[in-house]
Length: 294
Image 1 (tube, helix red, strand yellow):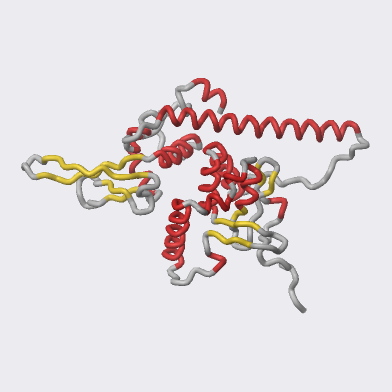
Image 2 (cartoon, rainbow, N blue to C red):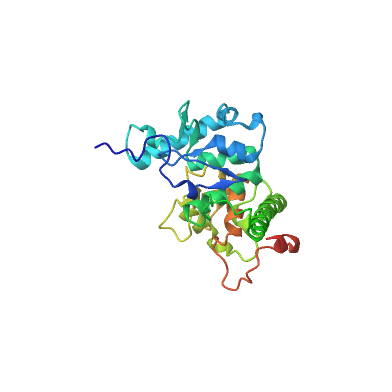
């Protein structure tokens, strides 16, 4: 007897009630867990100039896809990347057409649409992975019951206001970030502006996330270099030389933060993920307006 539990192989078996929802649009996934870029485009409310097809035509997008392919090949140690592992897949026709992309690509696409939408998508995906998303209720209230109908309307109104408030807060965060970030900053210099961060542990934190590595692990002091994974995406390097006590010149490399890297660090700061001082007062910013909106 045939097993017909999955009649449509290109549709994820995830319960539809657990799908991430953005602006009332369910972000469907395929069997490999890739996210539907067309659904993200619909949720963003952007025009056709921000459609997935336009994004995929960009040179930077093609380079990003190729880089992700290489990383996936390394992780799987397999010279052939079958369709279930490809970072992006386009389905034409069938019951679930669309362009489905790896989570990293989906977030990059959202960022191309707008910075605030990127933050919203990233948070939703994070909640989706950690199981924090509230199930989507498929039941309608009893409109013959005035009290039930009133409660349903109040719940909908509250949810809408929460969504509007979330987008407003993200816009404030982005504006605050723009005021903090200056080209040429190192990660430590950027983090010095963030209340409570233990700056002495920032480089080690970034090393744990594959951004930096110690090029002289046996030396008294670490020589931080930018890892291939983060180079020209989150960080770049500024080479130099310093004279040592014995008169010899020593090469130096200063990690320089790029804007995308600053966004990543700031987002993790607001989530409390950065190494913090023991005497941190629990406040994420000296900007009282932003703190009040958080």
